[in-house]
Image (cartoon, rainbow, N blue to C red; front, side, top):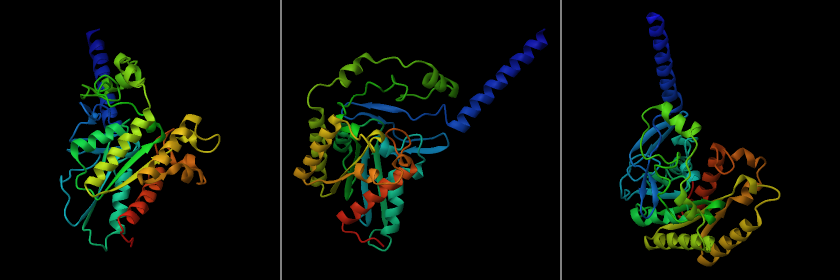
Length: 320
């Protein structure tokens, strides 16, 4: 009897160890990216992190950017672009470090400018899930533009309705952990089995009154002003939601917000790229999306190529 219990216990422990190791090595569970709260920005990815999720490499540098370590001030002979955005710019767990929009742009720009006076090309990626224009403005106000020759703000249609920055989800929402779980199995349990507890205070933030679109347009105007103060170029880019592609197209409130944005960019003389017409004109726009809002590798390539052409023109750089 005792021998049987020992054997059963050994088998259970062995299975536990095998599952734990498998979850860590194959999927990256047990080592999620963690977040920190910030009074102005709301939240940031904690600096200096490395992990793999579902085989995709993710690296966060000392300034909470998705990317490798950088110097605060770029080299005099370098070309530096600062990309501000949310999960579309960040790429999330479904995008390997080499396939983010910033990485694709950096490699292509380096190739395009290898015969120019630029000895180094960097595309910095300051982004986090669910950031909106006010989060991105607060990041720029806190850290500056890192001596970038151009600042690119990448938003999506939903960002026009983004709410005030808040740190409430950090450590309370499964998607914004503030510490590593003790086990990979514990993370799987928390993320996929345990029901998410509501955050009562968050309801007030999500029900923010007033002209939300106008407030976010004002934040974009402030980003443009800060960019001009540092003698940098500014590019605003907006990607659509998958349901906006084709018929019936954007909903009525989105059409009104889109028109306000278009009028705003003309009045502010902002270089603006709306990807909705471009996506609609492609043969298979659905093939550009990972899900209803985020882009896959093909979508990232599509967006990065258009952005690159615009930046080269704006910066008066001839492509090789």
